[in-house]
Image 1 (cartoon, helix red, strand yellow):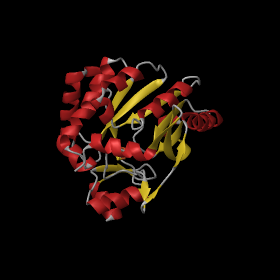
Image 2: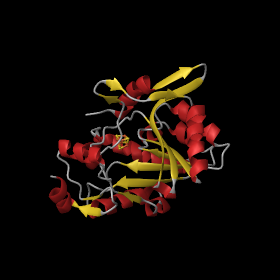
Image 3: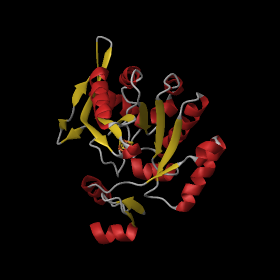
Length: 261
Ligand code: SF4
Protein backbone atom coordinates (compact mmCIF):
# COMPACT_ATOMS: atom_id res chain seq x y z
CA UNK A 1 0.00 0.00 0.00
CA UNK A 2 1.22 3.49 -0.84
CA UNK A 3 1.82 6.49 1.37
CA UNK A 4 1.33 9.30 -1.20
CA UNK A 5 3.32 11.83 0.83
CA UNK A 6 6.38 9.59 0.92
CA UNK A 7 5.91 8.70 -2.73
CA UNK A 8 5.71 12.42 -3.61
CA UNK A 9 9.19 12.91 -2.16
CA UNK A 10 10.58 9.92 -4.08
CA UNK A 11 8.96 10.94 -7.36
CA UNK A 12 10.07 14.53 -6.84
CA UNK A 13 13.66 13.29 -6.72
CA UNK A 14 13.25 11.62 -10.10
CA UNK A 15 11.16 14.06 -12.10
CA UNK A 16 12.25 17.45 -10.75
CA UNK A 17 15.51 19.35 -10.91
CA UNK A 18 16.68 22.82 -9.94
CA UNK A 19 19.20 24.79 -11.98
CA UNK A 20 20.17 28.27 -10.78
CA UNK A 21 16.77 28.92 -9.23
CA UNK A 22 14.82 27.54 -12.20
CA UNK A 23 12.78 24.41 -11.49
CA UNK A 24 12.62 21.87 -14.29
CA UNK A 25 10.24 18.93 -14.57
CA UNK A 26 10.04 15.93 -16.81
CA UNK A 27 7.31 15.98 -19.49
CA UNK A 28 6.44 13.26 -21.97
CA UNK A 29 4.03 14.94 -24.38
CA UNK A 30 2.46 18.23 -25.54
CA UNK A 31 -0.88 18.19 -27.34
CA UNK A 32 -4.16 19.89 -28.10
CA UNK A 33 -7.45 18.25 -27.13
CA UNK A 34 -11.22 18.60 -27.00
CA UNK A 35 -11.67 18.59 -23.21
CA UNK A 36 -13.17 21.83 -21.81
CA UNK A 37 -14.15 22.77 -25.36
CA UNK A 38 -10.48 22.88 -26.40
CA UNK A 39 -7.35 22.88 -24.24
CA UNK A 40 -3.58 22.83 -24.73
CA UNK A 41 -2.04 20.13 -22.58
CA UNK A 42 1.45 19.43 -21.28
CA UNK A 43 1.69 15.87 -19.96
CA UNK A 44 4.06 15.75 -17.01
CA UNK A 45 5.78 12.66 -15.66
CA UNK A 46 5.12 11.24 -12.20
CA UNK A 47 2.33 10.89 -9.68
CA UNK A 48 1.90 10.17 -5.99
CA UNK A 49 -0.95 7.68 -6.50
CA UNK A 50 -1.10 4.45 -8.51
CA UNK A 51 -4.69 4.41 -9.77
CA UNK A 52 -5.62 1.09 -11.32
CA UNK A 53 -7.52 2.83 -14.12
CA UNK A 54 -4.79 5.34 -14.87
CA UNK A 55 -4.01 5.94 -18.49
CA UNK A 56 -0.84 8.04 -18.27
CA UNK A 57 2.56 6.46 -17.97
CA UNK A 58 3.89 7.25 -14.52
CA UNK A 59 7.58 7.65 -15.24
CA UNK A 60 9.12 4.35 -16.12
CA UNK A 61 8.73 1.97 -19.02
CA UNK A 62 10.75 -1.22 -18.76
CA UNK A 63 13.08 0.42 -16.23
CA UNK A 64 13.72 3.35 -18.56
CA UNK A 65 12.86 6.85 -17.46
CA UNK A 66 10.56 8.59 -19.90
CA UNK A 67 10.24 12.24 -20.84
CA UNK A 68 12.64 15.14 -20.87
CA UNK A 69 13.32 17.90 -18.40
CA UNK A 70 11.69 21.18 -19.41
CA UNK A 71 11.95 24.62 -17.86
CA UNK A 72 8.73 26.47 -17.00
CA UNK A 73 9.56 28.81 -19.89
CA UNK A 74 9.76 25.92 -22.36
CA UNK A 75 6.49 24.40 -21.12
CA UNK A 76 4.70 27.76 -21.26
CA UNK A 77 5.94 28.35 -24.79
CA UNK A 78 4.63 25.00 -26.01
CA UNK A 79 1.26 25.48 -24.28
CA UNK A 80 0.80 29.04 -25.51
CA UNK A 81 1.76 28.14 -29.08
CA UNK A 82 -0.81 25.31 -29.19
CA UNK A 83 -3.50 27.47 -27.57
CA UNK A 84 -2.98 30.42 -29.93
CA UNK A 85 -2.81 28.19 -32.99
CA UNK A 86 -6.01 26.30 -32.13
CA UNK A 87 -7.84 29.28 -30.66
CA UNK A 88 -8.24 27.63 -27.25
CA UNK A 89 -9.19 29.40 -24.04
CA UNK A 90 -7.61 26.88 -21.69
CA UNK A 91 -4.21 25.35 -20.94
CA UNK A 92 -3.26 22.67 -18.42
CA UNK A 93 -0.65 20.28 -17.10
CA UNK A 94 -1.96 16.72 -17.02
CA UNK A 95 -0.69 13.18 -17.46
CA UNK A 96 0.67 13.03 -13.89
CA UNK A 97 0.30 15.04 -10.70
CA UNK A 98 1.19 18.73 -11.34
CA UNK A 99 1.64 19.62 -7.65
CA UNK A 100 4.71 17.38 -7.36
CA UNK A 101 7.60 19.74 -8.11
CA UNK A 102 5.44 22.59 -6.85
CA UNK A 103 7.98 25.36 -7.47
CA UNK A 104 8.08 24.40 -11.14
CA UNK A 105 4.30 24.72 -11.24
CA UNK A 106 4.35 28.18 -9.64
CA UNK A 107 7.07 29.38 -11.99
CA UNK A 108 4.93 28.12 -14.88
CA UNK A 109 1.83 29.89 -13.53
CA UNK A 110 3.79 33.15 -13.32
CA UNK A 111 4.57 32.97 -17.04
CA UNK A 112 1.11 31.79 -18.12
CA UNK A 113 -0.35 34.72 -16.18
CA UNK A 114 0.97 37.03 -18.92
CA UNK A 115 -1.26 35.36 -21.52
CA UNK A 116 -5.04 35.43 -22.03
CA UNK A 117 -5.60 31.80 -21.03
CA UNK A 118 -7.17 30.06 -18.06
CA UNK A 119 -4.89 27.48 -16.48
CA UNK A 120 -6.82 24.41 -15.34
CA UNK A 121 -4.93 22.75 -12.51
CA UNK A 122 -6.04 19.12 -12.57
CA UNK A 123 -4.93 17.51 -9.34
CA UNK A 124 -5.69 14.67 -6.99
CA UNK A 125 -5.40 17.28 -4.24
CA UNK A 126 -3.30 15.16 -1.85
CA UNK A 127 -0.52 17.74 -1.51
CA UNK A 128 -2.94 20.68 -1.33
CA UNK A 129 -4.71 18.83 1.49
CA UNK A 130 -1.40 18.20 3.21
CA UNK A 131 -0.07 21.75 2.88
CA UNK A 132 -2.56 24.60 2.89
CA UNK A 133 0.12 27.09 1.89
CA UNK A 134 -0.22 25.70 -1.65
CA UNK A 135 -3.88 26.79 -1.69
CA UNK A 136 -2.85 30.16 -0.28
CA UNK A 137 -0.29 30.67 -3.03
CA UNK A 138 -2.76 29.54 -5.71
CA UNK A 139 -5.13 32.27 -4.59
CA UNK A 140 -2.66 34.80 -6.03
CA UNK A 141 -3.42 33.68 -9.59
CA UNK A 142 -6.64 34.99 -11.10
CA UNK A 143 -6.31 32.88 -14.23
CA UNK A 144 -6.15 29.55 -12.38
CA UNK A 145 -9.04 27.14 -11.84
CA UNK A 146 -8.41 23.97 -9.82
CA UNK A 147 -10.20 20.71 -10.55
CA UNK A 148 -9.74 18.24 -7.71
CA UNK A 149 -10.40 14.71 -8.93
CA UNK A 150 -11.53 12.46 -6.06
CA UNK A 151 -10.48 8.88 -6.62
CA UNK A 152 -13.68 7.29 -5.37
CA UNK A 153 -16.48 8.42 -3.09
CA UNK A 154 -15.03 7.27 0.23
CA UNK A 155 -11.94 5.87 1.95
CA UNK A 156 -12.62 2.26 0.91
CA UNK A 157 -13.06 3.07 -2.77
CA UNK A 158 -10.08 5.39 -2.71
CA UNK A 159 -7.86 2.64 -1.27
CA UNK A 160 -9.15 0.05 -3.74
CA UNK A 161 -8.64 2.34 -6.74
CA UNK A 162 -5.49 4.30 -5.93
CA UNK A 163 -3.48 1.66 -4.05
CA UNK A 164 -2.88 4.27 -1.33
CA UNK A 165 -4.01 4.02 2.29
CA UNK A 166 -7.70 4.93 2.61
CA UNK A 167 -7.01 7.68 5.14
CA UNK A 168 -5.48 9.76 2.34
CA UNK A 169 -8.96 10.19 0.87
CA UNK A 170 -9.39 12.71 3.69
CA UNK A 171 -6.48 14.70 2.25
CA UNK A 172 -8.46 15.07 -0.96
CA UNK A 173 -11.38 16.47 1.02
CA UNK A 174 -9.04 18.73 2.98
CA UNK A 175 -7.72 20.10 -0.30
CA UNK A 176 -11.27 21.24 -1.12
CA UNK A 177 -11.55 22.93 2.27
CA UNK A 178 -8.19 24.65 1.84
CA UNK A 179 -9.06 25.93 -1.64
CA UNK A 180 -12.42 27.16 -0.37
CA UNK A 181 -10.88 28.91 2.62
CA UNK A 182 -8.37 30.76 0.45
CA UNK A 183 -10.93 31.78 -2.17
CA UNK A 184 -9.37 29.82 -5.04
CA UNK A 185 -11.58 29.11 -8.06
CA UNK A 186 -12.13 25.33 -8.00
CA UNK A 187 -14.59 22.47 -8.27
CA UNK A 188 -14.53 18.82 -7.20
CA UNK A 189 -14.85 15.89 -9.58
CA UNK A 190 -15.25 12.23 -8.69
CA UNK A 191 -14.20 9.17 -10.62
CA UNK A 192 -17.60 7.46 -10.64
CA UNK A 193 -16.78 4.43 -12.79
CA UNK A 194 -16.45 2.06 -9.84
CA UNK A 195 -19.16 3.17 -7.47
CA UNK A 196 -22.94 3.29 -6.99
CA UNK A 197 -25.38 6.21 -7.16
CA UNK A 198 -25.96 5.62 -3.43
CA UNK A 199 -22.31 6.26 -2.65
CA UNK A 200 -22.26 9.33 -4.90
CA UNK A 201 -25.18 10.73 -2.93
CA UNK A 202 -23.36 10.01 0.33
CA UNK A 203 -20.32 11.86 -1.01
CA UNK A 204 -22.51 14.82 -1.96
CA UNK A 205 -23.69 14.99 1.64
CA UNK A 206 -20.10 14.95 2.89
CA UNK A 207 -19.21 17.74 0.45
CA UNK A 208 -22.30 19.74 1.43
CA UNK A 209 -21.06 19.75 5.01
CA UNK A 210 -18.00 21.61 3.74
CA UNK A 211 -19.91 23.83 1.32
CA UNK A 212 -23.34 23.43 -0.32
CA UNK A 213 -22.44 25.15 -3.56
CA UNK A 214 -19.36 22.99 -3.95
CA UNK A 215 -21.46 19.83 -3.53
CA UNK A 216 -23.80 21.05 -6.27
CA UNK A 217 -20.82 21.59 -8.57
CA UNK A 218 -19.54 18.03 -8.18
CA UNK A 219 -18.49 16.79 -11.60
CA UNK A 220 -19.18 13.13 -12.31
CA UNK A 221 -16.23 11.68 -14.15
CA UNK A 222 -16.19 8.37 -16.03
CA UNK A 223 -13.02 6.76 -17.25
CA UNK A 224 -12.31 6.45 -20.97
CA UNK A 225 -11.49 2.97 -22.20
CA UNK A 226 -8.26 3.58 -24.07
CA UNK A 227 -6.42 0.32 -24.86
CA UNK A 228 -3.86 0.80 -22.06
CA UNK A 229 -6.68 1.55 -19.60
CA UNK A 230 -8.46 -1.69 -20.52
CA UNK A 231 -5.19 -3.55 -20.13
CA UNK A 232 -4.70 -2.06 -16.67
CA UNK A 233 -8.28 -2.86 -15.61
CA UNK A 234 -7.87 -6.45 -16.73
CA UNK A 235 -4.59 -6.76 -14.87
CA UNK A 236 -6.26 -5.57 -11.67
CA UNK A 237 -9.51 -7.49 -12.20
CA UNK A 238 -11.55 -4.27 -12.16
CA UNK A 239 -14.85 -3.95 -14.00
CA UNK A 240 -16.29 -0.42 -14.34
CA UNK A 241 -19.96 0.13 -13.61
CA UNK A 242 -19.90 2.90 -16.24
CA UNK A 243 -17.21 4.00 -18.67
CA UNK A 244 -16.80 5.74 -21.99
CA UNK A 245 -15.52 3.94 -25.02
CA UNK A 246 -13.05 5.86 -27.19
CA UNK A 247 -16.08 6.77 -29.38
CA UNK A 248 -17.76 8.39 -26.35
CA UNK A 249 -20.39 5.73 -25.89
CA UNK A 250 -21.26 5.32 -22.20
CA UNK A 251 -21.39 1.61 -21.42
CA UNK A 252 -22.19 -0.37 -18.27
CA UNK A 253 -20.42 -3.33 -16.66
CA UNK A 254 -22.34 -5.97 -18.68
CA UNK A 255 -21.35 -4.31 -21.91
CA UNK A 256 -17.76 -3.98 -20.68
CA UNK A 257 -17.61 -7.71 -19.92
CA UNK A 258 -19.18 -8.60 -23.29
CA UNK A 259 -16.82 -6.41 -25.27
CA UNK A 260 -13.50 -6.63 -23.49
CA UNK A 261 -13.29 -9.71 -21.24
S1 SF4 B 1 -3.96 10.57 -9.63
FE1 SF4 B 1 -4.29 10.77 -11.84
S2 SF4 B 1 -2.25 10.63 -12.77
FE2 SF4 B 1 -2.09 9.88 -10.67
S3 SF4 B 1 -2.29 7.67 -10.82
FE3 SF4 B 1 -4.33 8.50 -10.37
S4 SF4 B 1 -5.30 8.86 -12.39
FE4 SF4 B 1 -3.08 8.56 -12.71
